[in-house]
Image (tube, rainbow, N blue to C red; front, side, top):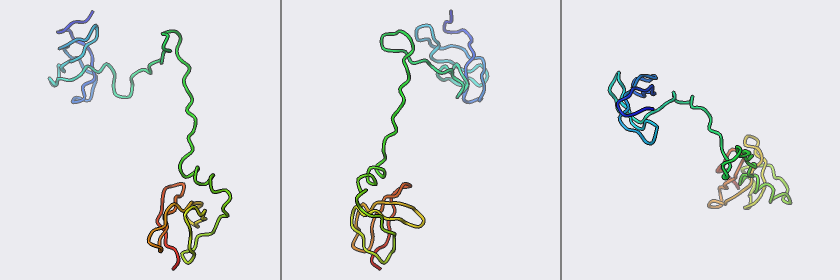
Length: 140
């Protein structure tokens, strides 16, 4: 059983190595604070090298067998929702000479399919594409 003053191996961020440390404080049966016997730095006890800690099993609330991991359902992005909601609107090829309304579906030669989300001062439109919103000119 470990106790303050005992030596234990811990990851030292200053030395960037697993080294012998002296235990300064315990929480229950686990070391809480340690100091490196090499560089004398004080820090929280780190029993593993960063990125090498074993995976913890998730237990059910009843404390029985491990819980079945939930599979996250893919959520539709705002872009996908706007496109799905505008299926009735015909796709218009983008041209800086044309005028567009909010909700128009446009096909841009570089950015692909997008939905007009905002009209800016009559000469610009904001279009939401899969990669994000773009400000485009119109009516020139």
